[in-house]
Image (cartoon, rainbow, N blue to C red):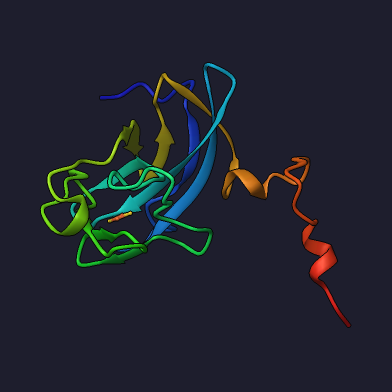
Length: 145
Ligand code: FES
């Protein structure tokens, strides 16, 4: 049994249907930020760093949910498929690689971040942090009436 007393609850199993994903941002212990995808692979609940192993600047979830089918995560760039439970890829450009795991635990239907290398910051991607000045126009500037 994994101690979840001081862990952050991410969501629940009921709120993460099979072949669905949940994107969140973490604070690394070196002060940088990282993105993580929590996935329901059918036989597992797992979490992975949100980038492909073929090109590490390629996000698996680009803010619209990771593409998933039959328990596999599909890289949006070249289509390699990673096993959602093991993180391993046996096909395409990323063949032979494995996604970087993030520790999570399920207890009584609740899903917790238990990884000791990072802390939960917020739901969504890094750029979804409203306070972040990333040089991009704020989302409200796209609104037209
Ligand atoms: S960038 Fe993911 S398979 Fe090429």
